[in-house]
Length: 387
Ligand SMILES: C[S@@+](CC[C@H](N)C(=O)[O-])C[C@H]1O[C@@H](n2cnc3c(N)ncnc32)[C@H](O)[C@@H]1O
Image 1: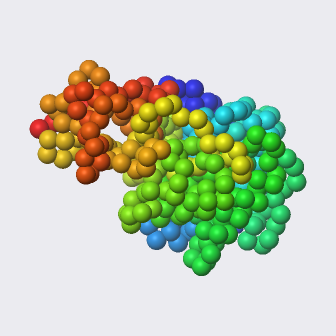
Image 2: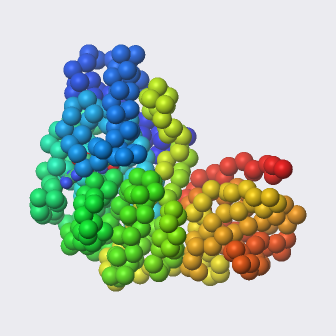
């Protein structure tokens, strides 16, 4: 179990204690829900899941002010958001001391920031009920947390203070949906947030990995890049996002994780898959800062699953030269390039000795692949070359 999963498991008793008080249940086990409790949470999770995906009727609505839905969010989506934030924060060049969590809900991103090393966090949201639960969680865990009511749609200014990190978790897709200038308004909100950032700080945005929300984030990214804001992660390409050139293309991250037992039980009962942590994220540096230095050579981040076609195995990579198809045939596999079959979304690789093709680049028996970073996670078992 990795350190993020271990830290998350330590939150489960706190989440359960706060949820039981909030829903007026008697005390119970600290690591799991009782049957009648599970039934209640699953009903809420199903409503949230249906309302936040598909036609997305709940998006931008006051679901956090509905006690049962907020409770379901706390026990199911909170741990997912916490883990997503911990993985994304791992890309920050320095540990933040102070953080501002915008659209915090019951503050999973705030507590992830504290566990990542921050010593003080302000959580801001328009839902008083969500902020109340965040405060109760902080009390339960003995963690410092300030909360502020904030709503950018009402023209509210950001909470006072200077922060090393401003994090926005699954907030932006709830703002200005359908507005003719939605991308401009969101990029203005992010640009404005830089005014509350200390020197060397960064803005972290995490969004759902849905096609619609991911592409919306990429459009916002392009506006910010155009204005001179470098992307610290995950982009290695400094121009306009190549995924946006084709309808239906997107870019998201997919991390395998070990969900806590309680999450597995809720997911199973609700019929929802949560075996992978999918998200779209950006780590944005202040205007004029430098893009991260990359090693020399042909560097790519893997931005697809492995695809099988006839004799080839394909991946899509995105790097300084753009978004490019990478492929290999079984006959060309060698010790030096075998790792191709084990690459996963998010890995950064260096390729030498590849050949140009119309459809991208082909690895040959002379090609070598080295892993620049796979964020420290173990590679999966080699794939069988299925015929
Ligand atoms: C999907 S939840 C995300 C909560 C938490 N950040 C997370 O990542 O799990 C979206 C949050 O955005 C907040 N939100 C939506 N519209 C808002 C607005 N206009 N002003 C402030 N917060 C808003 C909601 O209250 C809710 O807490």
